[in-house]
Amino acid sequence: MLAPARRPDSPLVSAAEVVLRANWREGRHSSGLQYGYTCPAPPRYRHMWHWDSCFHAIAWRLIDPARARTELRTVLRSGRADGFLPHTVFWDARAGWRRAPLYATRGFRGDWRTETIGPPLLALAWELVAAASPDEPGFGAEALDELAAHMRWLAHARDPDADGLLTIVLPDESGLDDSPKYEPVYGRLTHDRIGYLLLVERGRRLGWDARAMIERHDHHVEDVWLNVAYALSLRALGRLSGEPVWAQRAERVERALLDRCYDERTGLFFDLSGRDERPVRVSTWSALSPLVLDGIPEDVRRRIVEQHLLDDRRYRAPVGIPSVSMEEPTFNPRWDRFRCWRGPSWMNTAWLLVPAMRRLGYDAEATRIVASLQTATERDGFREYYNPLTGAGLGARNFGWSTLLMDLVS
Ligand code: GLC
Image (cartoon, rainbow, N blue to C red; front, top):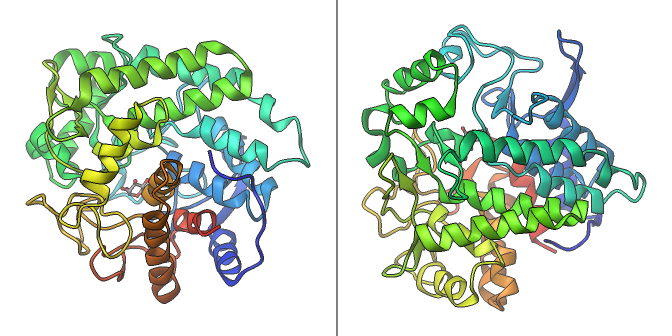
């Protein structure tokens, strides 16, 4: 996907290394399992999150590929033999008693992992880390069976209508916790409201059987971004294994995104919500994310860039790529104590979208976006996210995946 790994010697890389090393945790869990992972940002984010760890490994590969491999092996070890991989894992630090009931664990008082998923980026990260592992050439092939089991589990457990698109049952399964796109779907059960506890309790009552939750209730979405992540990993697994079945599955996801989520009128991709699969017409970066899939027709991808990313009223902000279109009434560029993904620019979304813009030839604009994030980072450090209008660093400090900037500046 991106250029092969290298270790540029620069102040940026040194600063990234300080953050990643400080956030590194390793040891042995009470179950006997060994772990080594990067927590996103202590003390607020002390645990292991699936997509954060995939991004951390992608960043680590530029500095210390052995750590990158350990982090991905730890992600794999956190799952079950049937292929399930959890959203959050509490290896060395239990969830605080106030937070524990809100994590999607089996019991109210917590557990060592959640029963929910995160954006399935592991195979993509595995491929990138394998390409940066000449010191361990067997890495690329060592987990093919487990990665395949994970993909099969997702299709079985999360695509009950077999249309090729995975469903999420909790808004935060996409990683985009409080995105305004979930408001029309979850109402008073959104991630930032007290009703969220009821949603988690419902999951517990139904044993986190997503099929049962999907059949009985309307609080679920076929989420565009989550399915983009899925397609990226299916493609990566296809390349890693050499088995054509994975590319075929990826094509199916891409076709379903195009046939079912693409809105010809706006040129955006919308989530489908509930049992009657209603499109959720809110413009967030998720609606642009199919841009990263080369299997989506070029004219559709160009339209995403030209009508959205290059539009000053929508996503062409002074700094980074806003997480919500500036045109949406819910757009908020600032920090909000209780809610994220409502406007600020994040590094991981730029890491995903910028190379896709370059592949289509929008180099000048891609360079402008990267430079804006670099300036913000040099001034305010690796923050959780940035105000897209001013570049002010917001949220947690020393935030792990913001070190992906290393990969963007090449
Ligand atoms: C927040 C983000 C989520 C991330 C987690 C850990 O909940 O919304 O995407 O995985 O923090 O960084």
